[in-house]
Length: 189
Image 1 (cartoon, rainbow, N blue to C red):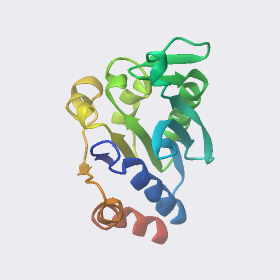
Image 2 (image 1 turned 180 degrees about the vertical axis):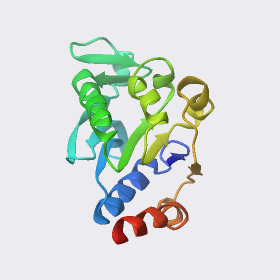
Image 3 (image 1 turned 180 degrees about the horizontal axis):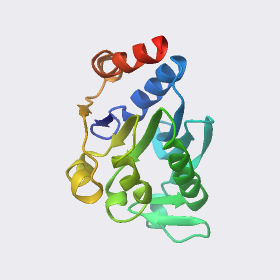
């Protein structure tokens, strides 16, 4: 089963996925993959951190350069995309975590965006997700949804669109509507 979670920037996609990971882990599921979470300093987003779900690792994923410098510039160990500079070591670690997570009960991949449609980020793992057995939870940019099937053959079983200030409500909805069957079967199996 593939569940997509989408919504505008800042709606709480990563927060819902973190709550779902904690819930599923607490019910005996093995977890794998990644969750990209905003890094905020003084109330402003300054980049993203990468959370590896299986081992709870945290490392810098992307930074937003100082706007006074004119945007992303090439730096050793960094890859520019849009207005971000991505840490190449974090991209490699993220792809390793997704690959290892393919064998877990639950795989998390957050966030899948336009960069993947252009051959960056987690794009190498996308076709492998389509045929995977087990529960897969994807954090999706609104703009990438039309590309899931044509590019990678990823057909969502459920899609939840978050609105601002709806994190708790959507977490409960996903648990009740989608996950209670698998949780009950793990607990009784």
